[in-house]
Image (cartoon, rainbow, N blue to C red):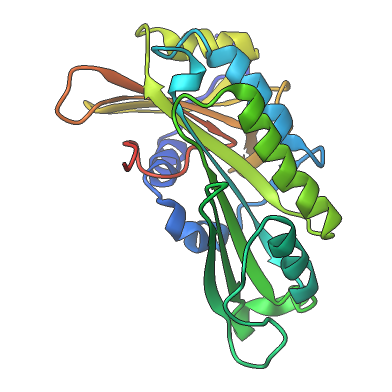
Length: 257
């Protein structure tokens, strides 16, 4: 048994809580003070290409027939958010330079992007008073989109954030029907990943890993993790859904049409 292998009931509880979070509850997740890190400005682009390669033969119809969704979040100044919004085709409903608290949503339906911006509560500013706003940016994709098109969209977002002077933390989740029951093990082996946490019940089996081949990461207790792989029974069907998250799975297990 590898030295890094450990199964902790507390870690399993944390994993399932994170698995059941929806994207609109990002603020609650963020406020748990779990620091996300990345070792490169284009970490999500790098990790997407890796996971596509590892998972391509594990999804029915290939990785292109799975559903990929991406998220970036972080604190920011008004000027950085406005530059990012302009670069990605958003129109903000209100300005960000007034004294009134801000809580706005903007969409770019053409590129399937959504942006949330809100003022940080005064009591949460602390040593981040120079970045008074929180933002979360989502990129959704359509099943059947090829890897080059997705990669181009992800790089567009990451390059826009860099140009706007924003330091955002990113990640993604992919879900689709698995080809074989051992798909999670095959993906973990391709990633050279060390298993750190596990959760299993009659509906869902989830394993959390660390892979040196990925640039993203999140701290879970004393360990850094960056890859979560789960198998879940599809509602009303016998097929099993394969869900992969970097650094962790976010959103519900079933895709919302």
